[in-house]
Length: 96
Image 1 (cartoon, one colour):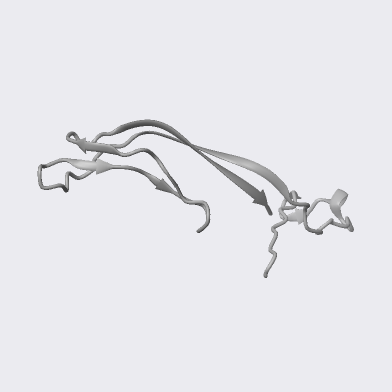
Image 2 (spheres, rainbow, N blue to C red; image 1 turned 90 degrees about the vertical axis):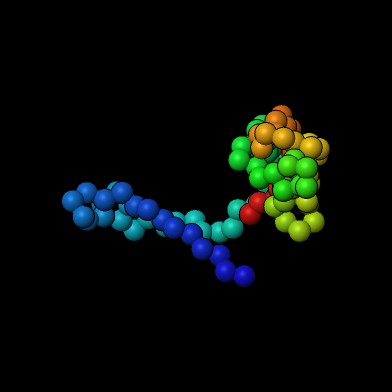
């Protein structure tokens, strides 16, 4: 596992600000936090009509990791390539 961070220090005229000279930066790992990611799916456009009748059965499959795959309901026999979903998918996420 590799941890990486980037510090951006303010500078004046290409030189380090004197207030930060010798400052000790805390680079310890943050504690893990739980979040909820909400994905809203409203509309699609330009969906190709691939069925034999010139329609398409459309759904959206979303995932952050392999174990949390979720999908919307299916819009059967869509004829205009612009299905409307108004659908929300929730993911529980733990950081870092």
